[in-house]
Image 1: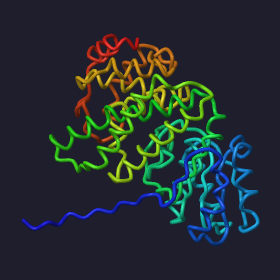
Image 2: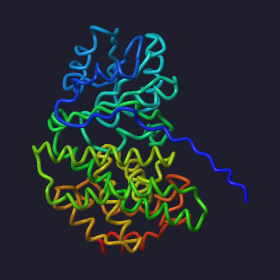
Image 3: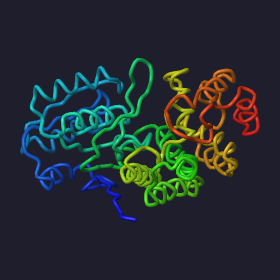
Length: 350
């Protein structure tokens, strides 16, 4: 039989992670042979944390524009695109947490501009991936976005973010534990496209976080270093796969359902962490190992800790399978309220 498989993989060219690496931004722009105007997309707080430093670092060699934006929704993406077109921006630098980077990489993708990711917190694994979570009419949708040409993750800056954000990022990586289980089942039962290298990288990132959990503590730059490395590995796995499959399964369907039912009550990674406990039980995996790792690092392991009532959690469980057309342990028809309640009780998240 003739071999006809072909695949495109886009990966970052330059990654800096560690203490005081933000000062490498000018060097990175020159190494990437960037010319023209630079657009920094950030928020009010993250401008002070890192955006101003970047502007000062590069303004001698580049014309720099700064756009302050808000949550990652289609309106803010459209406004940012109009601004970038007006300014004739040659490169987009996203500076901030998940939302600002999501907006920046979506703008870069739509306008075919190079994108540089500068995270100021490590709250989820989107800093390295080619997917953006954008809110549209109340729903959070995962869209194609630009793969970062470079990632500059300064651990001394990320350390200043609340510890809660770091734990949420670790939780989002631990979610790979159930995501790759679902992906492998979809490959075996539904013939879905599968990448063994992406699977291995995603599994490595999850295991790294599960094993490191006892060492996680606030105000520890080494902990930031370990989490940001795992987050970048998780994002790279998605880039290798060409989809979010290595890091998004049934636990993220639950997460998206919760974000729809109860928006703004918890961080994305916090919800995904609890979703991973529940779904690892349904998958027959070691849910206690997941729960214990999350608990010891200070992540929420009870639905009340993410602001959910039992009724809301059951509703999220029963509607989760509708969040995306993606085969998972939840099946094509979802689970019943009774089965959802049983899972919540057995895993002690109630």
